[in-house]
Length: 241
Image (cartoon, rainbow, N blue to C red; front, side):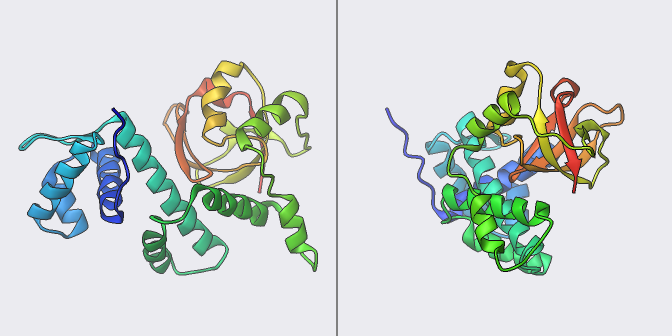
């Protein structure tokens, strides 16, 4: 049986809020959702039942709420769309943070993945392109390959590694620093997960947090938030931007 996982904007908002609460507190209760979204308990109950029917959450009255694997993937997609839009408005259009957040909330439900990916490429272009001039847009077009960044990242990391005198290991960066990924080396089995999430040559990565002993390292790349183990970062070379 094929599940109907088409969601309204309202249900996507609930899924996103459940994801954020679970990330922060691990335990999600209906009252936490109602407080965060400023809606009635009855509205929350109706939304939770709908999400449970679509098998996106585990829900029963008086019990904690958890995301199913499918629900978690859908929630991550909504969060990614929101954060990519927010970053574009703030970093490129210089929009106020609160206004950017509100606009991202309105737009995140309808923007297709292909356009989200173009926003990401444009952000990377703005952050890494050193010059300007009348050919700026044409240069940006050259920065936007249609091919999958996963396949391209695999080819470039294995066949055409980028070199730079300023290259350093990703794990050498400090929280708040941004860098462009130059190359990824090491075992392909370790690289598969991070390539799938956009950690590929040419991508811009930001260090969010480093655990006290240096493992794991929390990063943001292409709108995703990832925790990388030490063995995954050993083969990633970057250049500060």
